[in-house]
Amino acid sequence: MNIKLGIPLVIAGILSGCGFSEAPGQPPASSSKMAVAVQNPPSVSPDSEELWQQALSAYQNWDEEKALQLCNRALAADPRNYKALSTKGIVTAFHSSPEKGIQMIQQALSIYPDYTAGFYDMAMALKLSGQYDESIQWFLKVLKKDPANTWSYYGIATIYADRGQKEPALDYLRKAASLDPDAVKAAASEQAHFKHFRGDPDFQKILSGK
Image (cartoon, rainbow, N blue to C red; front, side, top):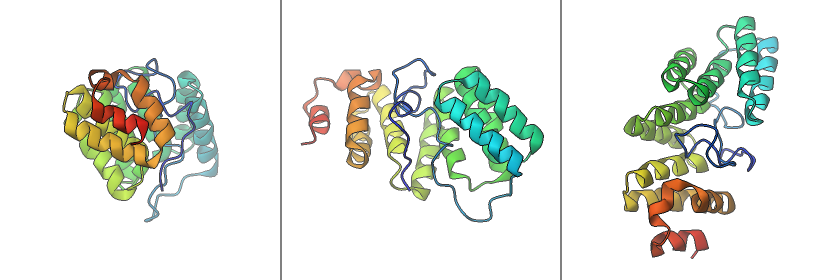
């Protein structure tokens, strides 16, 4: 059930905590193609579902203003569209206010507590707000449901790397690289999170695949 996001989406947000402007390529949000649990998800009206899909497409193309507008329309059509709430939350977290984004994602999870993509969105929003321990816990919730989720491993790795904690940072980076070597190595070699490890032989081994 590993999240499969295209490289243009796979390097800008998960690692950052800095918004859309970091390096292109890392996923800003998980809501797109992450599998969600199948334990009685609430129904969503077809019109609202279609609008949410359009919102997600806009967000994946970095048009957050359009994404927010479409999320609002989706929620007007169905206020209990937890997917639109979660997507609106992570867009808001990147675009303007992590705290407001967290509140929206919390609303989404109150409607569907088993929404795995919402777990990821919460992890990202908490990371953006600087709540790193809490962010790690939500990434771990994703991994409990989706053990092959590359970018949750990577997200945890970046938090430890930013703290200068080499062993856990490289442990999680190694796990991420084992799942999607090319994308993870490209991200790790470019992102500032790992700048202190650039000359470290253990870090270089991960990048070289040895």
